[in-house]
Length: 370
Image 1: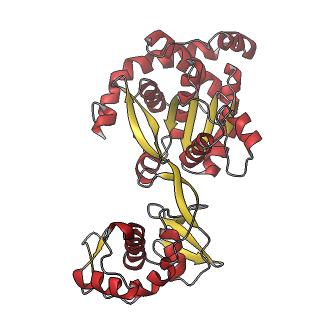
Image 2: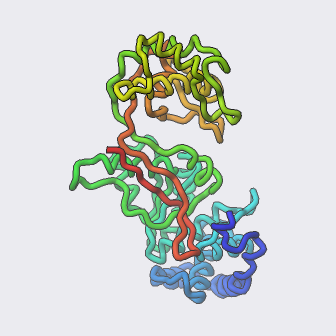
């Protein structure tokens, strides 16, 4: 985390305390203005440079008064301190109840007013829709448009939402839309505009939990005829005798006895021979499914379907499946109809990136498989 903060610890945010004092003074001077007078103030405020103290103070003072009038929320000094720090590219750790949603509004509006295209990465679709609706009252006076990208939207609705100045969405929505754009015919207009600035809500969920597994777009692959028999062969193997599981339960390997038993069952002499490379891969996938993946821990079986469980949140991961034949192997183990072999077409990793050694935002990195 020190790589994000540069100067670890929230006490270092006090470097912005003098700016906050000026913001509070600026806000107080605006309170006596009528709505029409305040409107004339914000009409020409879209072009700002956040690196300039005067512009930052002017914008946050104005945005604070707009928030008080439009949202009924007057930012406290700790919220202004957080907003000023984030607009200067630092991660802020706020306790529950300190009002990070309003801080997110101020930061998003500031970045958009500085000419950035802003994505706010929320923890789930509900929060994305809720915050987009609530923040619109603050954004619209500055001439900024806002929308949310939600799971049920079709391509037309998504394209319109992405054209907004500020877009609320989960990292999964943006990531999978980006992957689908990469699969389009060259010259076809995609959904996701150029990625620019991201305000990350619930940073531990987005940049840690969601970053543990890549987002994958998969296509159908031809199943191997031996894979069905492999499920039964592997099911008859014994732990320690035929295979060994590592202590962290993240990897498993055949023993010599296990390898010999699999080769005998398949009627081949050397599973590691070049001509059996696909079969070797299938055997390891089947072993992984048998020894490492647990029902009601890593997945559920509901209505005859295998549904993945998000390890970090303990919730069902909608419309996700394991790649590289693992999902099909689990279905075979459960005696379910195999819904199709998945072949990875493209994937994107959620990672972090630092800009100019100080600005921190969520980033995407693509890994193309072709």
